[in-house]
Length: 121
Image 1 (cartoon, helix red, strand yellow):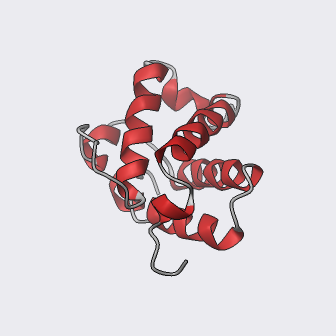
Image 2: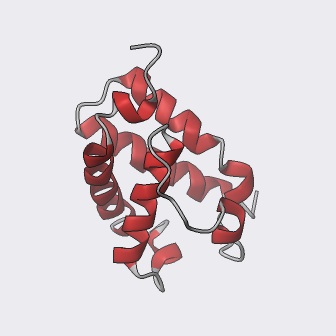
């Protein structure tokens, strides 16, 4: 399994799509980060996140949204909020039965976007 992408290890786009739905349920239920999404069309956000993660995890590139820096500019996302979001992703994958080593790989992909997303250290 070492040569497989995170996309393949997660079981492809259908599993990523399901994970994103569960992930946003966690995020929107968490008052420490839900305010970042108060003016967000969550249907569109979910679809864009599904496409982005599919691409970021090594699947086909169907993502046509803004780059990470432009997409998060002005939101004032803190390092702590970023950590919370990544933890929600990890917990979602864990609940879906994803092995710890694959969750770590997915977290590393998420971590690679930190500099473009976090505005407040």
